[in-house]
Amino acid sequence: MSHQAPRAFIFDMDGTIVDNMAFHTKSWVAFFERRGHAIDADDFFRATAGRQGHEIMRTYLGAGLTTEDTVLLDAEKEELYRELYAPHLETVAGFDQFIETAQEQDVRLAVATAAPPANIVFTLDGLDLRRHFDAVVGAADVARGKPNPDVFLLAAERCGVAPEHCIVFEDAPLGVEAARRAGMRAVVLTTTLPAEAFAEFDNVIRMARDFTELDIDALFETTNNIQQAQ
Image (cartoon, rainbow, N blue to C red):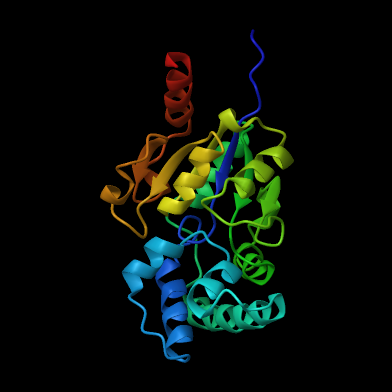
């Protein structure tokens, strides 16, 4: 019997494990409105999903913001987000069963998110999910947000899995692009944007509304077939 290389699923957190991006966008819009900026919610999401808070702050409030400024401002925004989303905190349909089945099949699991530590605690610990993951990588672990591949590459490294044997689960174009740059295939959850928003990506192997539509064996079979054809 041939030895099977280690495999991993790497999950973006916001919009993928939990269907919360509308609440993030609402909190950003409210945050910037306090400072006299009118933000179009759809345009904002498409331009910023997956980027780190300090990157977004400097884009909209000026490149001259100090690190101390961005830390304080980001904390204010994220507190607003948690207040809005806390009553709705739950996993996307089918997620819990999906990762349980993945673990039974010896698939390693990781979270790779642009979220700051407080939001990771809020979501993963609030839902008692952290214990399921072999690695959790967030904004505090990498200097650059998506579409740079750093967060996915570090998650793969901490899982001990080669990038080509990782499948990323994402809901945002910047995240899918980050996966592409990392050399990873992606599954898109259309919790936030329609399938058409991802038409340009050649690394997307499946699109689904939630995890109830996904079959683990079929995902890896698709990835293996693509690799053999290349």
